[in-house]
Image 1 (cartoon, rainbow, N blue to C red):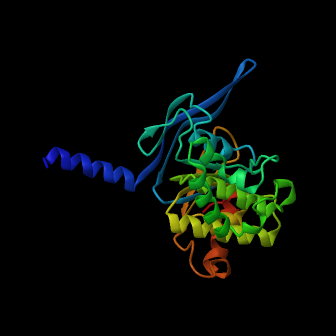
Image 2: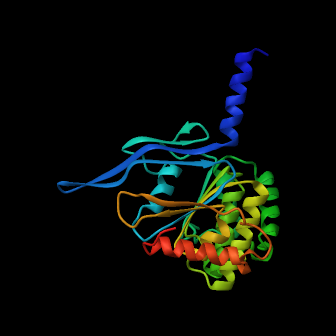
Length: 269
């Protein structure tokens, strides 16, 4: 193998290992009557492969918009959004997106909701059934396989939504306040499940939340956004303790919560 080929392979490995996501001088604006609403202005952000990144900030600060840009559902007005070295200007198959309202079809039962993406991709029925049965068991949904969304609790519906995404084997998982409508105990159980899946699969995840404790429990990296537009990062916090045993009860968890709350209230690090 030539030195040039070795250098090319090394560069690809470095890209695969590190630069999963890149916002490069990304701008986004909307025209409103005679004015231009600038949501992003030459915004830059890099996210490493396998990182669990949480975005937190006041309502209207552009958190969800960032997910839509990453998903290819919005196009930047200028600059680039890059995922795995690919410029994003349309949805990509390897990106999973879970919305706040779950996005389930009420006329489809649990099995059909979970298998919808596989069916669209032309996966044979027998192969679909094998994948679906496995994930039903993992999600604790086997006994609800023939139920419809209206017959499920909020936590069960969220598990179905997560199962549907995971059957497609994404390398990037985007979540827009997926647990916000759940009661506290159900929310904690699903937070545990999300963390377990993220760490086991080494999924790159980007989660939007308004909940400080959720941000700290799930994010290996917590990005705090300012409250005004254009969107601006006021802190990018590393959270190396994420995933450690009984993390919720530790001093580090409490101290990081105080720091994030102070930032959101306009204080300093």
